[in-house]
View 1 (cartoon, rainbow, N blue to C red):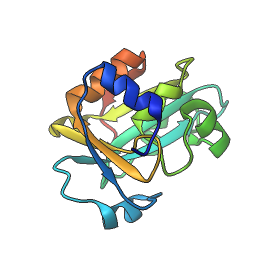
View 2: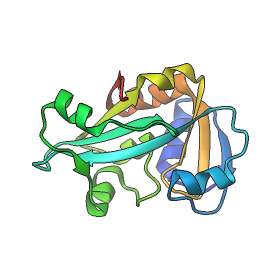
View 3: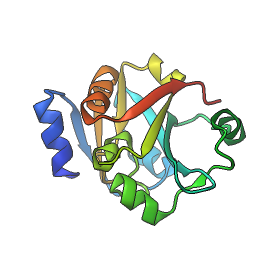
View 4: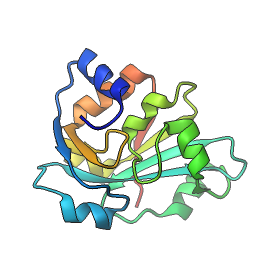
Length: 163
């Protein structure tokens, strides 16, 4: 299976079941739409930010068709301007390359520097689809199991309205 071995090991230890799909590399939502099957799940957009000082990092997950109001998020966080984190920061904090970002990357955030924001709208889906830290595969898991993964990993997260 494609993806990070440690991720599959943790999912196994937690008895988290998933559906696994392989596909050509997809780096954007537009690329992904070509290869999405009927996953019967919410499809997500994952965006990795840093604050203006570069000392705080945020992973924002929302439904793939939603438009994030970045300015509103900046004002709520009081962290100054948010910018997309560099490829170097992405690798350093989530252990993934561009196009492979997902909450599963938090398994590589050993010092828990990344805070996860999940859009409240995602709660309407019983299952969600994410890359397993590589953009040539997709895992579909239950929303509850995603939260179990985050808690077992010690990741900080919260549900907020993002748009």
